[in-house]
Every structure is written in C-alpha cells, then in structure tokens.
Image 1 (cartoon, rainbow, N blue to C red):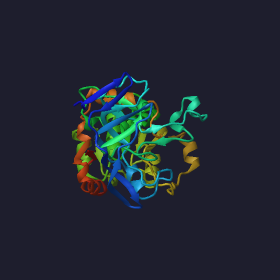
Image 2: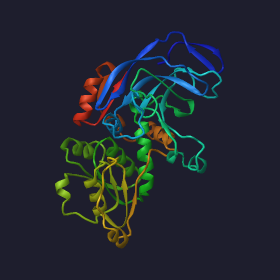
Image 3: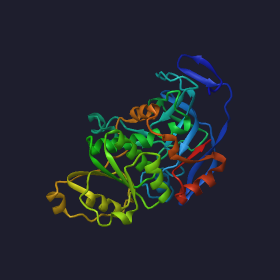
Image 4: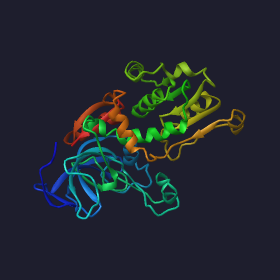
Length: 352
C-alpha cells in the first residue's frame, strides 16, 4: 500500500521513482472531457503530492463540462471526490501525514481572509479555490493538494469507499440543516448517491424515511439495501401534500424543488440539496411559506464535516460501498464518462 520513498528530512520526502508525466482527465473544451498527459508538478511547502487511488464522478463535473460552472478554470483537471496515498511532502510542511498513508481530500480551499472565513464560515468564502474546479483535481494519476486538505483514513476503509467522504460531508451539512428529530417522517426526492447518503443519515437520526425516484432499480436498492420505509414512483406522490416533517430535494430540478415544498407539513423544514442550473427558477407562494411557517434551506459545500464523514464511513453502519456501482481505470475514462452520463447505476468510480 505504501509507495517506496527516501526521506531527506523530517519535513521533506522525495519519491525514489516518479514519472515525469502522468495521465489526467481534463476539461479541454466545451462539452468534452479528454485524457491528456500532464507534467509532474513541483511540490511547495505546505503541500503534499497524492498518488490518486480512487476518484468519483459527480454532477458538478457535468456542469463544468457543459460550461455551467462560472468559476471553473479552463482546461482544469476534474475530480473533487478523491482518495489516494501520500506520495511526497513539500519541504518545510508541518503535518502529521506520512508517506504511504491513505487520505481523503477536502477539495474546498478558503482564502482565510474574508469576513466569512474569519467568522467560522469558510465554506461561504468570498474567494475560494476548489480542487477539480479551479485547480487541477483528482481524475488523474497524481495531484498536488494543501496538506490541510488531506484527511487520514482508517485502515478498515477502502480507497473506493474513502472517495465518498467529500460528497458525504456535504450531505452531513444538509442533514444538519434538516434538524431531524427521532420519529420524524422524512421524504427524500431522488435516490442517486446523494439521496442514498441522505437516507442513511436520516435513518441513523431516528427518522422514518420515504424515498421518491422514477428509477425502479434505485427504489429497490433504497428500500432493500439501505432501509427506506417506503420507495415511491413520482406518480404515486401526485396527490400527496403536507405529509413530512423534513424534505430533502436531492435532484437539482425546479420541479422537484417545488414538489419538496408541497410535501412539507406545517412547520416543516425543506432542504434543497440538489444543485440546480444557474438559470433555473422555481414558483413558490410566499403566502404558503408564511401560512405554513416553512423553513427552506440549502447547503453550500461542506462545513467542518470531512472528518465526521470519514468517521461515519469507518463505522460501517451502512453498506456505503454499494453506492459505487461502476469502477473503471483512468485509461477507460471515455467508458466511465459515457456510463456516468447515461445515469445507469449509482456512483461511477475511476481508479487511476
């Protein structure tokens, strides 16, 4: 599991053998993610070089590919859901990380200078960077990240499961917003990877959970594998309204966001977890929000929840590995991308 290396000092580790170039999947032009060769980067103080073990594809990658992520850098290497092994540590870096250690990466890099960073809200940073969005990410054989972004992973968590830590950390933030109480009735719209994560966390909070998704296989998995109380087709919810204490929208479409509001009881909390297009709009009655005393919230990235996510994965209370339905090598990226776009299965994982 460890990469061979030679230690030069307590803070500097140089691999005994590293390639001069490596393979990466990059957003080269609108509508396309292409495999390219990248030069091995220089590691600065405060950074670590990670040999990527597993990287998940996410809806954000699709938004980047289609030019729908305004802050994404041109020709960026995608991949913000990743795990890997520490391959080298920049000289002078203060860290407890060791070469060969498996780590999961938090892709969000706050500026630490704006008012939000200075008031314990770095996830709302005014000038953030993001691995796989504004800087090269983990859909590659190697990636350089800040040492502070690398979180150690326990031995009982596989690299494939560890790459779920970032999306799970975002769902933790969303479920925190829902403020679920034991015995609450919760609805989750969408049974993709994010919806399934919300399902597992809601159940662990003591809720009775109903999942809504048009895909029969996903509904079956939600109920039989992950413990949903009920799994419904959207057509079965047409006449339902004001039924749930908490509703999580995990699709990212205006229609399901409106439906989430309709399904909430008086005094309920609606959490829009799915990421909508920048031009999407929803139609909601302000009077209904007032009369029913609704709370509508939406999480942005994660909020000090990466370590919590890794701990939850290590607890093995849910069959997290079953969220990953397809695994490909990086050389098979074209097939992985095609599978991802087809929305077949659940999480697509690439192993460089």
